[in-house]
Image (cartoon, rainbow, N blue to C red; front, top):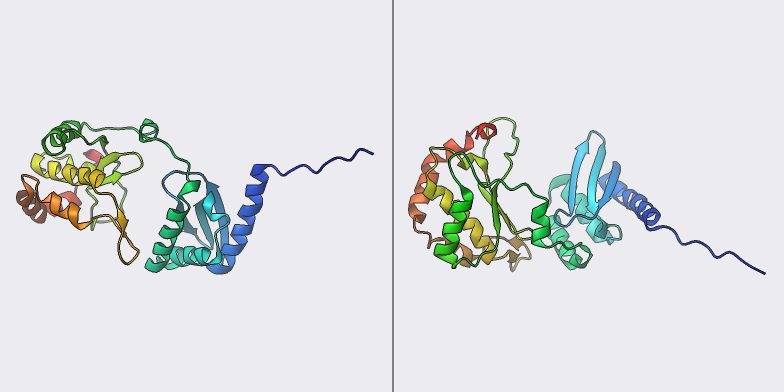
Length: 248
């Protein structure tokens, strides 16, 4: 007598089931309504926002089967930005990197719009000359002006540069592309971000992520205009904070 075997659930259906379970588990910890979106990003593992009484979270699929202590840390981080919870989440993500889809830096850069040529400073030329002078042209990275973050009211701080180890892309804040910003200062910021290619972030003795190890800070002092760049920053920080970057 023939008998039909049960059909295995489709992967997408399984994800939906696990997502609903995850929402219920987070609902009790966040004490409110929760909507979870599951993704397969390669860089940002979690983001969240509060919309009135609703918590919206975008989580990498590694969180679908996260243990209770990780979900409790996630709730604490979302509710109040708890530093210990953030460190626990970092460790969980590091242990589960095998589940992160890997793309080559070249593949990642194809998805980006690189704009290294500014009105006053050409980042490409600066990068090439620094690479030749200080690194024997061994650094294999790309450079671009990043988008100007939108801020409401007066800006109190500014992140002048960043480096992505995944895509090997250096991003420079567009506020530096001004005629009053000297070239040597832009060179210093680019040099600092190039050092992040050499000295990777690591875990400190306290378990926290250290992105500026002592050897990086010591190497930075070899920059030819290090003291002059520091002095210019101290005297002109307001110029960068007040820059209307949408016009830069």
